[in-house]
Length: 232
Picture 1: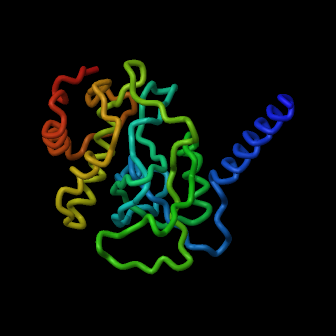
Picture 2 (picture 1 turned 90 degrees about the vertical axis):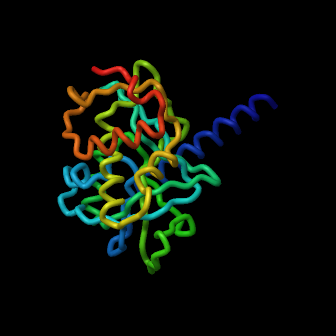
């Protein structure tokens, strides 16, 4: 009897993993209209076009029942990045833009630590703007199952990545005149931590820092310990 239970359990786990694998990075049907949702580094124009040159124009949207948090580790850079996972009742602001199937495959390589999944249309809204969603697919790069790992002293949040994220938020705020859009980026992001390194001068990943003053001002308003973060 015990052998049967163990066999059934192993079979269930294997089946669940197979289903999950099939959900990740599905190749869209030929001729379909596909959009990628950016919620972290893909919110910033300069970051997007490093991978997809045509991804210059984006529009804002809101996603329900997903949670953005600091929980994607890079063992190579020793950094914790932003990630996304399904979470009933949560909401976040983000952007979306069209990509061809070829361009999506290219982006999959950049985001290979994540799982690209389809977002249900009922979980998407467009800041009171109407949009015909018929025949459109909206994809987002989410955390692989049971793979959310929060910042620690060996895998901190780094300022150079925060700058990319929030610079993208300010770009959207300024272009679409959405009040406090950048602040919403902060308040709808979970897992902020004192394990946070200011690597702006010598970035662990070498990027420039537009909007640095506005970013510092906003972070100081939301985190009392921000200016105490260790400088590398």
